[in-house]
Length: 70
Image (cartoon, rainbow, N blue to C red; front, top):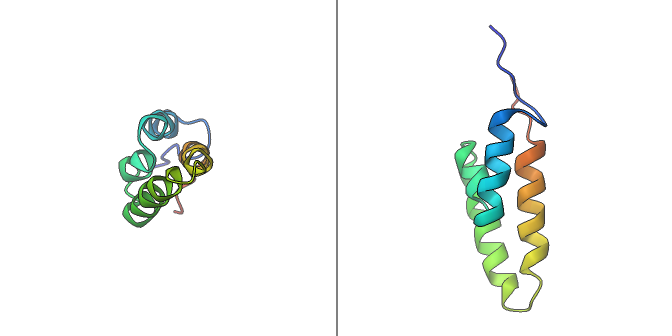
């Protein structure tokens, strides 16, 4: 059985939308707990110095491009 995973799949689009609202939420939806926690806290920490938008943007792109290893 083949599961459609990778850039552009419905699951990744949903994850990217989740990360748009909260950095790391898309990774959490994908089951990547460590990446989710890291991106959430890094974005929060960097928002203090006005660079959190970089991590926030990376979080969205990372969720959209994720490809599960089979």
